[in-house]
Amino acid sequence: MNIGITGTGSYLPSKIVENSDFTAHEFLNADGTSFKYTNSVIIEKFKSITGIGARRYAKDHLNTSDLAFFAAEKAITSAGINKEELDYIIFAHNFGDVSFGKTQADTVPSLATRVKHYLEIKIQDASLMMFYSDALAG
Image 1 (spheres, one colour):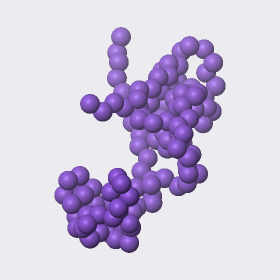
Image 2: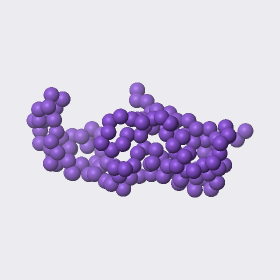
Image 3: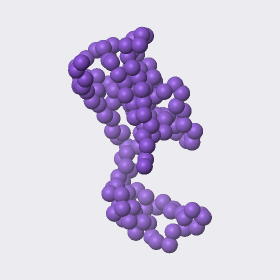
Image 4: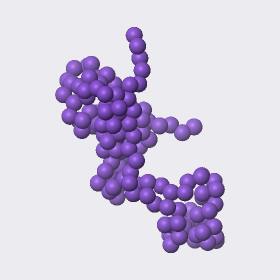
C-alpha cells in the first residue's frame, strides 16, 4: 500500500493588522489597571518576545471551517484529483468555529464534516475518512 500526501492547500486572510495599529489601544493589567509603560514600549516588547509584527484576521462572517474549505479547494487542485476521489480529510484546529462576537465554540458536527459539506462531496459510504485533531499545547 502506498501512502502519501498528494496535495496541500492553505488560506491566508487578507486583512492585515500591524503592531503599529495598536498604538491607540488601551492595555490593561489583569486587575483592570493600566500598564505603566507606553504603548510603543509594550508593542516593541511583544514583538521582541513573540517575533510577531503583524497578524491576519478573517472577515467577520467567516469561521475556521470556511477558511479550511478555501484551503481544501487549493489542496484538491494541487493534487490534481476529483474531489469525489478523496480518501481522507484531515483537519487540525485548536478551538472549532467561533462566530464573530461570540465566545462559544461550535464543534458539532466536526469541522472536517463541514468541509466535506462545503466541498459538496457526494460520497456517502465509508470510503472517505474524516477526522480532526485538536491542537494541543504542552
